[in-house]
Image 1 (cartoon, one colour):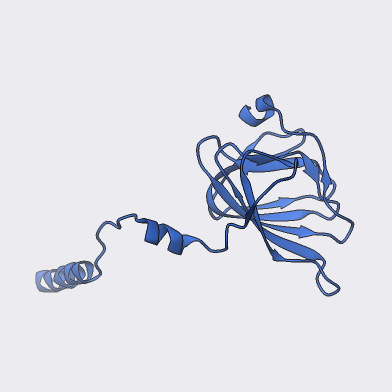
Image 2: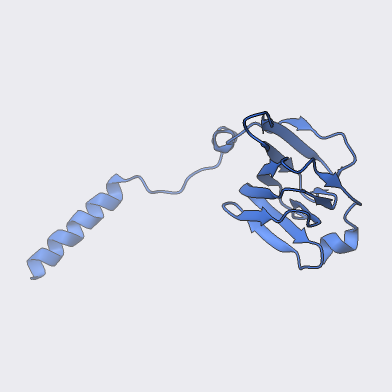
Length: 159
């Protein structure tokens, strides 16, 4: 029995040493390789506060009523309150962000989180105060375009 345990232990150690599982060094080359979709163009409209970049990946057409965009928020940046008449899905691909529906508490979002924004419900989303945030926004245009509302106040953002 001791003989089998020693063989298993030796195999395990050999496997661990052969896998090169040492610490991974961060470099700009590695960080660039982690980007899934292009950052896009810097937003210039008044529907966001702070620095935001948007890259349209899929436009609506006669076959598909949903648009898909990659949205990158600099730390502290966020959308205004807004409504999607047919709803929206957010897929978090990087960073730390916030999502809040009118009348509810703010939710913290991290890479891998998915949010289903109900239709006709005012909400906002954006980056945390100290970390950038990247999301894929899948927005149905079946019942019309996004309806943009007022800016998120500093108090709403902090609370």
